[in-house]
Image (cartoon, rainbow over all chains, first blue to last red):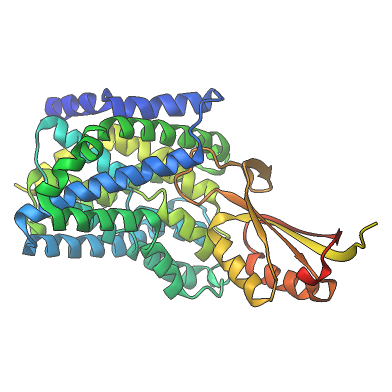
Amino acid sequence: MTSGFFDLAMQNILSPVVLFFVLGVGAALARSDLSIPEAIAKTLALYLMMSIGFKGGVEVAKTGLTAQMVRTAAAGIALSFAIPVVGFYLLRAISRLPAVDAAAVAAHYGSISIVTFVAATEALRGQGLPFEGHLVAVAAVMETPAILSALVLARRHAPSAADTREPIGPLLREIGLNGSVVMLLGSFAIGWITGPKGLEPVAPFLVDLFRGVLCLFLLDMGLVAGRGMRAGWKDLSAATLGFGIAMPILGALLAAALVPLTGLSAGGAAIFVTLAASASYIAVPAAMRIALPEARPSIYLTLSLGITFPFNLAIGIPLYQALAGFAVR
Amino acid sequence: MVDMHPKKRVEIVMEAPALHRLTDALDKAGVTGYTIVSALAGRGLSGAWSREGLAGDAGRMVIVICIVDAARADAVIAGVHKLLARQIGVVTMSDVQVIRADHF
């Protein structure tokens, strides 16, 4: 078991995807002028959403809508509501972070990182381990509930900071219609409607280029994470840094407990557990700037992108795969 | 010599996620037009920021520029302040001269 996990971890760490991320972090920390223009970064992100959405939809076209899909989505929504509550009280217990910062951080951990999802699917593909295509849709429905939980926590524990006079309805609509979510779910629907025949003519673009584009995007994420680490390091205490490692593991354990209810395969369970362990980096930070403007981005972005994302990418993904293996037995 | 007319120029450096809320508020305040410019990079009380490499809106800054009549300037600034008081950003107002007074 230990050597199996070690092999998986080494295989993961030495993959091009992880190494390009490391290159980005190293270049940013060394103050290299290497950078990806904003418009290219957005295009790469849209391409990734389009590709994984479409491929997920094609998989669902083969199996049809199943009870397993509904059960997994329900479990994902429940986790997205619950994880911020656990994260908030844990962070308040171990650190001196103000409630508004703790609530904003908690929202990030309840939501998901689609790039971590992609990295996990690539790791499984490398091992030839299949997983359920509908998990793309599960990822999409796990984006938003965490924000609601975090806002309730903030309004209860930091009423003055949370009083932005910002109605929740329009905010949730904006998050739900966030460009990346629309692209992901839209491509999923198109893949579902058109099926394997629809994928065939676009496969050279959506499938063959995928890994190369992913490497370029991970290089960019490494650059942004490295810049965030350089700027935000001073705002993080040892306890807060520890939270960035402990919270994804805690989220993974909660998800693993729900895996038997979903009926997912070993590969699907690994993805599901990874989703619960991941922390948002695109949708939630923007939502927090509107809903909780007094929460410091230097804390939640540095934790999510600078600590948890690299941890998940290098060690978390094989760890969650091993954990999911236990959960499906 | 072309006749010039005094007006107020309001310049708002702000976080991109709040942009639509601001433009909605400007529309409601009767501002006749504005220009939005994407900011490249900078540094302020909340630290350094750069738009390079960002796939999402958080961390991205924009500049909104509008010209308003002096009679309406205070109301516009009050609306902007109400909306952005707790956001990262800078709001300035300066005296300018325009050629076509009826446009603002």
